[in-house]
Image 1 (tube, rainbow, N blue to C red):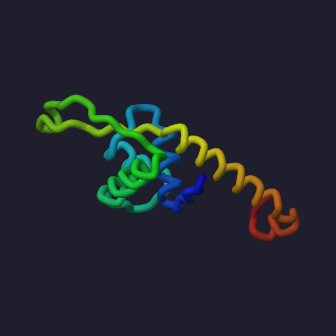
Image 2 (image 1 turned 45 degrees about the vertical axis):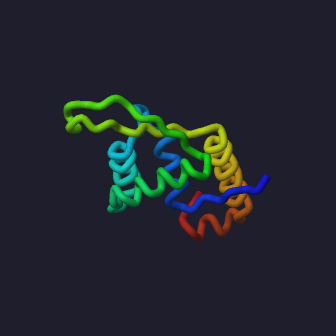
Image 3 (image 1 turned 60 degrees about the horizontal axis):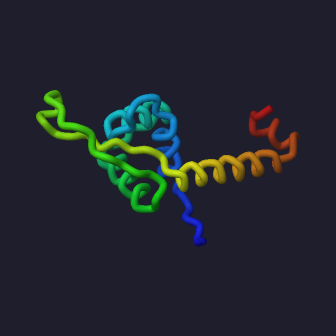
Length: 113
């Protein structure tokens, strides 16, 4: 199986979707991304990334019901797929392995203990 790699922003978006305690849709994901990263992010960048992650098979989505507060428009809810979950686990394992490979004296120099 060919492995698909995630860019940093894709990884962060996937992590936010996985961590959402409520139904994950564009605005909630966008707000969480900005809050968690401290970055100013456009909603269009979030939507483009969500759709790209869905195309890669890391997310799935379904349409919710129309709501009056949205002028009758429906929300698209995103969930992490088994492939997305596996990718996050692989990324975490790789990062843990790389951090453990740094000698203790170097960790102290970069301010990690």
